[in-house]
Length: 281
Image (cartoon, rainbow, N blue to C red):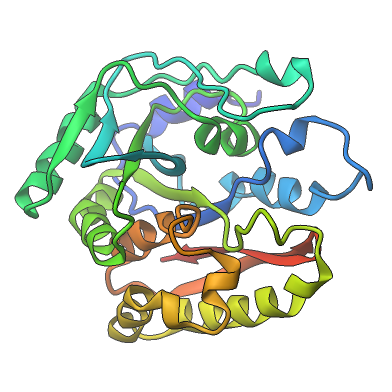
């Protein structure tokens, strides 16, 4: 008899397995759940997301998702027991505003996150009313479609300071040994004016190559490169200054990786731009 997700989680709930850290692309709005032309525009990314769970060492006890779609003055933490969904995309078919993902929150994990950030000298605020935005529920509908793993979202800080977000990731690294999967949800290329424009193909590929080498570098070199990312080749063409929020979840992920190695696990040219995903550990 095939085990349900609930049975598998129950069977492993007392087992501590160190989880990797991921930085994933979440696509364009609800792109995986609508028809595009050409029809297979997002199929490769969808297939990648659907296969993530099978590559983990064990089912996570919980998920910490850092979404590009939530910014706050200090690091915000969802702490509601059953957050609602935030349909923060616009102009898509009506049915995409009826998508569901009934994952539970985790007030206990939210408190643990707040404590770890505080111990690192980083201010945070737990938010009882904040829901799950599409940077969370759109990819997780593909990764864990049964929505049976508790999820907490962490916001970005308004200043988008790479150093602060690397530090936040470092502070949260102990969660990995507690069975928590840390996922940065953004896009390795995110310039709204560049999608579909062949003039951005080569710049996006060059920046992607730099990002790939930086992620795979020894930790000290990796951290130094990410702190100084705006000076990478074509960086500000791929992530315009002031709008780099889709790259910053990678900083949290890299910080949580610690000394673990990093590598590219997915890459594809979509809408004439190169988009990739990375894994640490």
